[in-house]
Image (cartoon, rainbow, N blue to C red):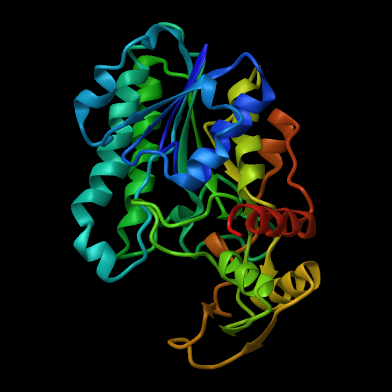
Length: 333
């Protein structure tokens, strides 16, 4: 049985594909993406490329997946293609594309899924930003309740819409589909792609630390739950392979919140170089936080469901940061 992943040459999904193929030397997979593999992706997949088929095309095209050859041996799917622009100008200029990819692209994946005779499981990839700022005053954020996408931002609105459509398709057609909500992801393969036009805080911190540079932070008391892309891949593959899943939706996160100040200190000590300072001017800061955002999408996520159903757990944050720094040294030198 093959695995089909949409968004396969992008940041998180490229980690999923490689993890799946490395875990089983007999496994095969299909990557569907609007962009062909760039040099970084070719290097990333070099050890498994003989078992990986690349299909280049726009997921908004309803005929792209409908015309797929050999669909009968697809046993697993991950609907991971997404447009994740930053708010503001890029969102305004790409509004129709964001809706097209995150809603209609996801629907095209579901239409393919219902035609597959041997589909064992499908994972629909969503985001923790569907929670907005809502969450419990104490304790980690559970999957049930608290859903309220950031007002005026298309990405979480469309991702929640995709979740709801996936759930209804599951009910209508008996599809084995489950959604995952990702916290703040960082790690290998985080780079500019057609669907991702920004660098996350840890990407900036680690690159500057490796270069021995200084970075500035505004709102350093602001928190986040940070998860390594390789751990996300491990979690998704665990969900695909698990003999029984007991929930519609799973958080994938580290399960703990850390301030930008403590995160900066951890990067400096782990990498062994770099420095940082807090400034009040958010416009000129390299990294912008908000000390008033302490829960919901910014706080710690409850990962007990995922642990119980798959046995998964994230690596320690310091180890994850060290791994990402080593990856940057070896792949971006």
